[in-house]
Figure (cartoon, rainbow, N blue to C red):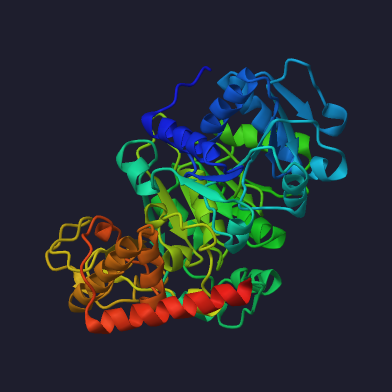
Length: 490
């Protein structure tokens, strides 16, 4: 193999092997974008080949087949492709790459090991294949394994390091974000309905194509990121083209891309973007998954969403490292970072525990403290703003910036006195998790259920504390509620 594994990747591979030895034939590998999921999978594929087993690598979209085949080949595998007229297979292939659409349309080639890429997007064809090949080991790969039903299809979750750890250790790029005033976001979204857990796309497009869109996409980009290769995540085609039209009117090289763009044209557009000929690339459901250009260092969020998975997938497009890349900037014209936070806030939940909050709850998710000088959102209790250096920087929550300008987003916060109480609740939840012999992640979700907010990242290493009587009573009722919900869903 051409790429040696880092220590944390070896640990993931060893955990997957241990899981298989314990009888888990359906395992899920949760690892951040840029953490090397494909590299880990390639070593597992190589091990299977040494035992005489050909592997099947399933991607989510037809257009990702070529990209996956090239990546696996570059890593050092003998790779075949199953894709209509582009099919090329050889008896010595260690791995065959195919899309789930192809697997659904024709019989899958025999395989002794299967890897499902982007496993959080699980199709019926995936489930059918797992049922038919019940003795074949499957590994799913995902940076955002948040679907509540994943626990029905996978029996073991192997987590890699968090985004925060990967960033601190130089594997990912630090991110800062600027986001609009929440009042204006709420006003823009006020009339937009929710269907199937997210905003209705047609209504969202109409609301966010208006000139009253929070902040000004062009002026903010020119002020903060004009020297950065930029990706725009738009609501729909009309919205994307409207944004690109504004960039072009300013003389900025920009291009729109969508699912209807012909493959040859798409390759040309992406090549010109990577070459620097195109400065801004806007898309609808094309760049959020599978797109790989580490040099991209600015992301414009123009599509509000109630899906944490979609939000984190979009942020993942700009957090890869690249030569000369010091950081990445998010210009959030959708309020998504206020709702879900930055990449460093993301923690992979236990199987079946993702995206469990209601849309109504997610809409209201916004607890922040703001620096009164530079408008950076910072940890509560900060004696000094880490961005501008002002002493005693805290001011009231919710107002992030004024006059439609953008204020820097940091971490979810509340007042100092209230924060101490919340911290004690989090430590009580840790005590409960430890005493029951379950993962610490339970405390994270219990805290969310109690406060409708995420615990501060700085609390991750706090010691457990025995719950008070009040905390014990709440925990008991919460466990009863969870058990009832689980039985109702069974």
